[in-house]
Image 1 (tube, rainbow, N blue to C red):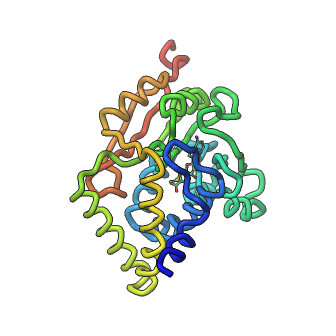
Image 2 (image 1 turned 135 degrees about the vertical axis):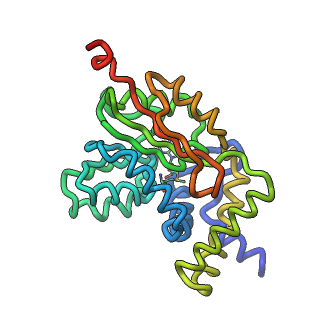
Length: 255
Ligand SMILES: C[S@@+](CC[C@H](N)C(=O)[O-])C[C@H]1O[C@@H](n2cnc3c(N)ncnc32)[C@H](O)[C@@H]1O
């Protein structure tokens, strides 16, 4: 029965409006999203921007790392990377690679609004595609500003509000990129799994979108941060934000 198929596709049970998303739910979503995004040049371009922006950082926090593509890319550059996420299950693909990177890879289950790190612990941080899902973005950013060392950099990305036609164009472009990467047959079945999850997620709670001006204000207000670069997010083709903030180095200022 068609109804049974939909029920199977939507398991585990999506949260209802106002309910928080469980680890099992996120792990399921991330596996489906990963099958699409890890194949998109636009996603890789967003990651490249973050990697270039953190070129001088050696001890980096990949905050809300998900399955950890950025973590792995930065480990491969020789950096030490701490990958943090709310849920253990999401970090499982990274945990499976722990041995290959030894002490340079740390995996931490924790909440980005209450980071389990000392003030000034990292000289670089990225939090890509996370702010849309965070209930208290001000608390989240303030915590990241706290654990960032003076002179360190934080990169954040996300969508800005898309009208119906720009949203549809983004979807068409993603599908075309997926088709170039995987070929028609694999792209079509991967896309068939992805779209219902995307819809289900958009119904389950707010998906917060910020303009570049709003993100700039939020970063600046979170404590001693100034925005040193902000651009469109390649993932949304001429929309969204990809911002780099730097923490004020008061010791340097006073010299
Ligand atoms: C769309 S994924 C992005 C993952 C990864 N940064 C990427 O670019 O592929 C959002 C991630 O944010 C995590 N997350 C959401 N709220 C969080 C919070 N308050 N603290 C830590 N992680 C959180 C989710 O578990 C999920 O892995």
